[in-house]
Length: 485
Image 1 (cartoon, rainbow, N blue to C red):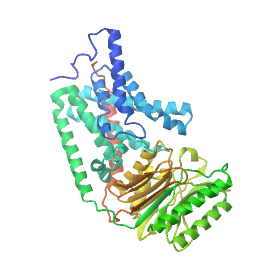
Image 2 (tube, rainbow, N blue to C red):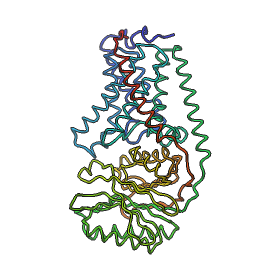
Image 3 (cartoon, helix red, strand yellow):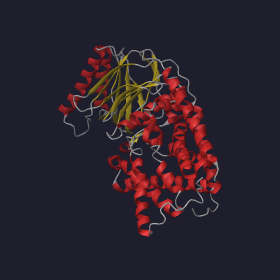
Image 4 (tube, rainbow, N blue to C red):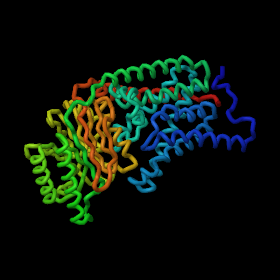
């Protein structure tokens, strides 16, 4: 049996320079899998294994070597976000964000190493997942962007394991995802002494996959009325020529009429099609109010309005009876919207015979807002959105996860992103990439609106904050000196 504490140095016996080069190569090799899972378009299956090389190297190296190799591997992995971050932030901020995230990786890996080497017990398999869930929970609660890009969202297309989100939310899903590489790393570095911990991990994973598979197998087929989604990537801004702006609005009107003619009971348009002065916005309101009445269809339209008090990002819901629209104001603002006013009210009302809620893009990245709509009885969420091309998959799938956590279907129409229809079990029933003029459309039956039981609303936060408490305990337990590996 190989004992971690007594194992020979991983790169010993080949000279100092050769050993350093071997360590450098190993760190870069360990960072490559992270590159494919830490960005906005992660490879889902690889996320189960990507942290394994970093953990194994840390357990088989001295603390100093483990530190610089972990830092190098994590920077390489996080560099997959560079192009995306540059769309949103200046270069100094990009470098700062990557550096902070890399330091978090350093903290988690070194703390895990310290606990494993200090106690050499099977329970230390919990250190790595507990620490990451704790960090993710704090980020979700305190940062203006929440836990955007959490590794948990990499499993949004893995339907079986995704059902864990209905039980314990993103904290439960992330814990399970981090538990697997932790158990493998201990088993590979420590041998049979950690076989019971690895075996217990295997049982938990099998149970999660089997239970999730059973839950999705029992999910009903789509049985609701037809819904239409229409998106044109072109934005109507202050510099847009009036003729071009009119052409975009006319094309949206044609899409609505065509989708209604094909049987759609509601048509969802994207976020912030234009930012207009009140008089111009009122003209748009009157036009689509009349169109909803004429076509006999519900219309959801995203628009920005410049008022004396400030700018507001709104979603208008037009009813087929021609009544004044229901208005919802975005709660969580994206970086380019820092000068917009944030809303605080929720909107749930019957639409096409179903209780539907309104949210806008980034709102659905935050679990508390998603939970509030679940508690209010929403069976479907209508989400106008505007992505940044590179994050189209991530934005759509984070919203899918909110639906699984809270038991409702989601319709999301994103400019520079995707048009997506998903059910309460996370099945993406229809999806289409957005495009510039003349735009993209999608017609799909609404998912069945039967109540879907979930526990994530209370168990998710409870589990997340329990991991925060355990993480603090673990960090305190690991402060005692560790013999050199």
